[in-house]
Image 1 (tube, rainbow, N blue to C red):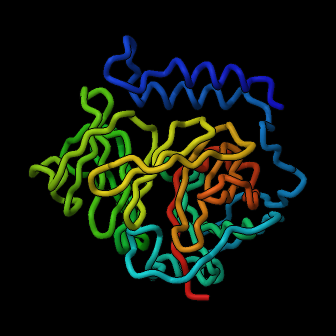
Image 2 (cartoon, rainbow, N blue to C red; image 1 turned 90 degrees about the vertical axis):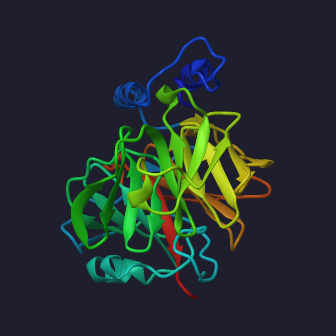
Length: 318
């Protein structure tokens, strides 16, 4: 067991999550503290990862596949119909052209990393580079069609999968972004004094027009992930993932992760096969049963991708 478990739990418990707390922390400062803490933390944790299973030697050039010797596999499910709802829909052509072998896997994910935007197979740990240097450090992604969106804290940012040109929304304080069908759900910045989730019909509307809806959160999360009819949220280190109904955020039963209480660097619900995928701080995918919270599999991608965070997945027909 990692010796810093108590420290991480204490730090988590001290972090303000409601407007009534006496202390506030700007998300950017939180990222700096989190990054500095990771530099001093050794591998391990309540769920121990076998580092010997990782055989990759780093991210390759665009289209170059890197293989890691993962164990287990993430459930694939069947294909869906909407690129933003629970990961359903077609894999974008830009992803297929850059990484054709991985893009044909039953479950295909796009993820942030310090090496750039990656295309990853969570069932076997293979990955390839979509494009290089990427300043996106967000644990939440929103994908609509050919574009991936994330929060840049002072605005929402996006890129096309086949074009690394960075687009910016109008100024808007945010903490996280995800997609719900063809809409973007944006969590207002903690420094704005609001605990609200706002719905926008397009990227161009953010910070320009009034949101289509605004719903209050009882607890300010660190990351969010949209499903077909649910919003999933979590703190950056936890043993539970919260689920809320969309669009009213009515609470649903929490997902209690059995045997896991560690860093969460991203999450995505496979709502077809009833699983929850989670990414930890050592670039390992965990698959949990959404009903019981039981751990079903864990697949390491690459031990050098310590800053891999935030992902979104698609299901191919099987």
